[in-house]
Length: 242
Image (cartoon, rainbow, N blue to C red; front, top):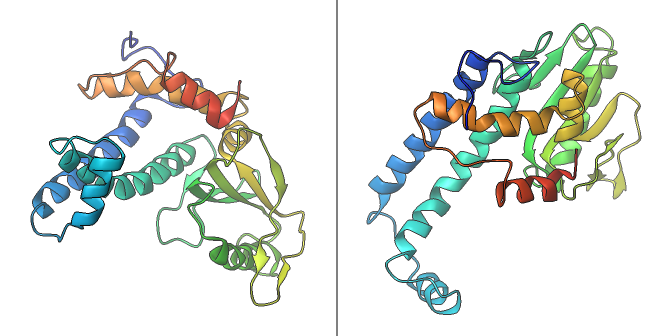
């Protein structure tokens, strides 16, 4: 059961900060839902896809419209979830969220760290990773730059496997056919490891995940228990055991 709102849910973040981040996510989800409903009947539906999904995947015709609506909402929600993590990390003590459109997503000036945060390991296309490397290289290596000498992290909140990593960021460069050079100041890291780095708590990402029901309850929403199947199993598959 969710804790009382006055009890601290996380040791590194105030309850109202988590609620604010979830309220913004709720706003985006609701806007995406209303848009999908409004667009129903306006957009041309591929009847072959609909027929194949109903027949081959065993989807009932009455269920298919809602499934298609969910698919349309998913992209907006995925982008918003990436911004949710950016917002949570930017609310931590000593960290600043520079927001969309800034030269980089997050900065901790005291620890001389900057970070670009993506929600999943495949959010950024491979062809775009070389450009990100070049941007981060210029930020931390060019003299006179605001973040010269900082360590830059490319953060993938949801990794490809549950293995944790903190490795040099060396994406392929299609223009040369080689990988970018290793640089001690330019690194790639999974989300659980970066949350641990930012907070000092090894299981910080798990703590945020398990605090979600408290935040949703504070918004008056019904919740599911993140500590039990299937959500606990999904978390373990994505991040391993804490």
